[in-house]
Length: 202
Image (cartoon, rainbow, N blue to C red):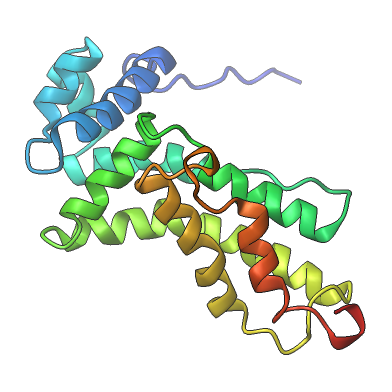
């Protein structure tokens, strides 16, 4: 039986190094310059690649930025499989809160908060690619708490997600830390816990 020869794709293979450089440059450019000054050409210059290299991959700046934003969406804090439910929830929330104020992720979110109202497509992009993955993870955690009896079965999951994530984002964006007198993640969870646990666990 004759062995079939694999058919090679036309054109040069894409460079993984160029892909990574373009995505990183896109995030850094957005954090430094904002959405209005974000362009394919500027990303190419920062990434050290030709404009043709960028245009072969993306048809416009929105597609390029969305591709780069998937990196932030994939960087969702992981949840330990074992341990106390409340400790695990606190640890997960700390993962949302703890990125340094000057980190790339924090600078990007500050840009989104400042420019999202003027650019609805930017707000929609970040909501879908960055915020929803984190909401989905918290939703899974809370549902596991209900199934294990650690949370009341009638808990409003969506309202609880807002009550948990909101303070983490607020504390991070304003650079408020426990050392500066701000609430810790543990104390925030403890305040909410009183209204979330079944009567038998209170």
